[in-house]
Length: 348
Ligand SMILES: [Zn+2]
Image (cartoon, rainbow, N blue to C red; front, side, top):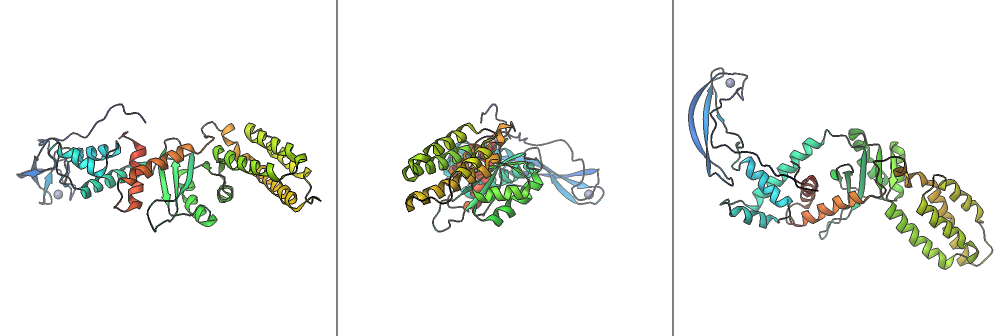
């Protein structure tokens, strides 16, 4: 994320430009109907001048605000500026202190509302953007007592979180309920995830491509192979070696080769019980890798598909880090606002 320029909304002290349409009716002619000085919270101004107008059509009066000002007591600029300071890494307290340099007294609660508002704005803009490659990952939020797992979906072309739900990643139906509307609404064609059976099943059911994070595959398969070397009889060690190199090279024909290896290992083995169960384990490993082989190498033929789920993990890491500074508020909303804002960076 690189910051090139930062621009904040302009705030005018007053406006001579007359309103174009009446907020109540479609009337277009007005009489000026007095003026008021509106106190504002802003990094430069303490108050702005607001004219009142009376609609010649419906005879109602309304306030016509200069740019950067609305009904709220903070200007748009201050709302953005305070969010920006927080996005750049300050805590809630730190942001309020920094704003006091400009003579602005902002409560934590007001700042918190600004963060929510900006996050909501981003979310509204986002809804219309299709997502081709979606990363998903489970998360177990900090906090005592409430260890409800969360599933987070990230647009991998931008690193922006697009959805979050209280979903246990091991629960097939819950995962399906979470992903189905997302896939439909966003037009997702590839999902990147860990090597969990639930994700394999759901992506298959939804008819989308599935790329499994290679870090995870290599980690768990590597660990399994390492343990099997202790128990599998020596004459089968070459299978362990070949499995390992297949996984490193990911050739297109890997699935067939793993299946052949699986067939070569006898189902029943005369040796000790220990080696028998080790060979059963090896067979299970081979058949599983063979079955899901295509999901290990989608990145090989689809150029915008990453071969790991790192971008999703990074997005979640940012959410976790930022939501820690809003502890004490509802952690759910905090996580979400943190995610929306910190991943969007300062592109607004
Ligand atoms: Zn009117």
